[in-house]
Image (cartoon, rainbow, N blue to C red; front, side, top):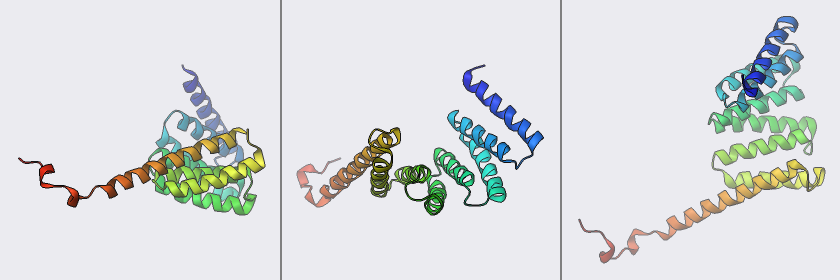
Length: 195
């Protein structure tokens, strides 16, 4: 049995035992479910992760409330699964709501709030909204530099994501310029193919 299979087996076993001993809605059971969903995502089993994320989020909303930090983590995890499955629009809706709640509950500069903003920027990139992603990533980078410092891994990751945004935005601009330069009226008779 490989290490990933072993980890998955342990995660499934732990979740089953906690469900049996503590009940479906116990916070420790829900933590185990969240951990297993993360393992499933790491194994590229995104549909199974999504299903577990959806169940965990529904339970945490009911037991802990909409704005509890664990509930917001579950919402963020579900958005990751949705994006991995190609549903960037639904992921964006989930991330927008989670970001708004984290801003209100935790504040703009909390690491979890900045993580939600970064996740929303990833949704925007996946939807081809590179300028919006860049603007959000610029804000995240500035906040992380101020709060965490230049050399913190989250700060350097934000810088890398901003570089991707800039590159993607530049590529779109170049493509648009090439389309603008192409005008059928500029083709002379000698350039029209004859068949």
